[in-house]
Length: 318
Figure 1 (cartoon, rainbow, N blue to C red):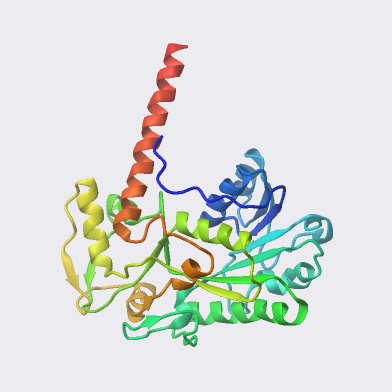
Figure 2: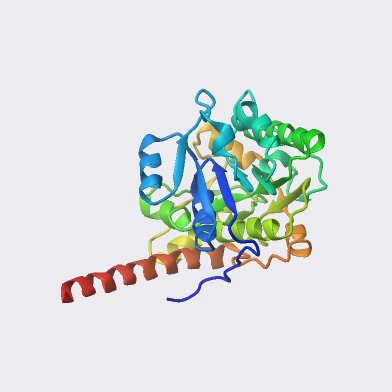
């Protein structure tokens, strides 16, 4: 099988990662760390997903604001690393409100990663932003994320929580990319002149998180983004060309009918710098632009399909 990207491994072994919110990114990170001998566990809001995780050897707990983990002392006793990806609400971060004090009291904790968003920078009229740019969220999503960042930073400042904040651009990867939206018929090519946004492939999120675990610096903030902010209609066009599907028509932003959440996406216009993850953590992006990333997504599909065919052939031979 072709290796699509460098495999960055943790320098530490026999550690234990707990993921609050075992979603898309946590799944890829957990798989990578499990392969290196780490114990991985986490939370979900879905009983069905909990059963799926347990079936695959991962301890899982049901958790939301109204359902705390019943025995945090024993559950977190040996945890060394924590990933926080539960979205905040109007009252802040549910994990902070429910278990923040429990986590701050952990004696073996070496690293905490909070997955935030570049939406906290708000609209910058197309200008470049970096980690020193003052947050100026102009959406509810961005404001809630900034509040959550500040909550966790209070535990870093007051309790010494080994916190690392990662501000992510639009996440994509296998099963969650422009290729999938094109195939489902939901993709639209909306043209707003001068508008561009960054995205980041899940492979590069995972390798950045591991790089931070290898070289922790509590209190740090990192932008996670690709090298090439681009208009969304170009990404959709490339995905269509890649899989041989006719692209949807180009629609002017002023004439397009959009849900409020979609329109708010086009309201923010900024270009995100990622220099710090390169200079401080030594990250070399596996997918520095959407073209590389989408091609990798398609290659994963092909390799998975080939593997299934190969396995089917073996079964038939038996």
